[in-house]
Amino acid sequence: PSVINCLYTLLQTPQLSEWPRLPGEYHGSGCTLAASLAGDNRPVSYQGGLNDSFKAPRGTVEFVPLEFTAARNAPRRLVTSGLGGIFPAGLSIGEILNLELSPDGLFKAGDVQLDERIGTLTEVTVLVPLNPEEL
Image (cartoon, rainbow, N blue to C red; front, side):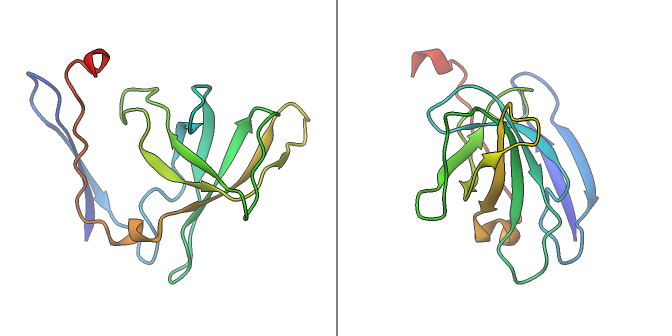
């Protein structure tokens, strides 16, 4: 099977992209996107990981501000930031299971566990309001 992305924008022709699905892996393996912690608008970096079959999908988060904490018993939700215009802000990516000081000491980094249902998705539609400021 393949992964097909169709981007619909107002008054424009839909843009289609298609590529082969990686066998035994979740789409997004190796991708990087701008994200943010729920309730905070500062961007962080999410990196999809190469995931083994039959295991929970995972990735990593970097450049998290120092004041944030996360642990398995108190995870933090990671959401899309809206930067780049591909995904609207606030879509759930997963939960940050831990955060540790990065080697440079300026930020924190940690592991992200994605929703296990991601591997079963065959089609996703994201509806974005025309005038989000009116919500």
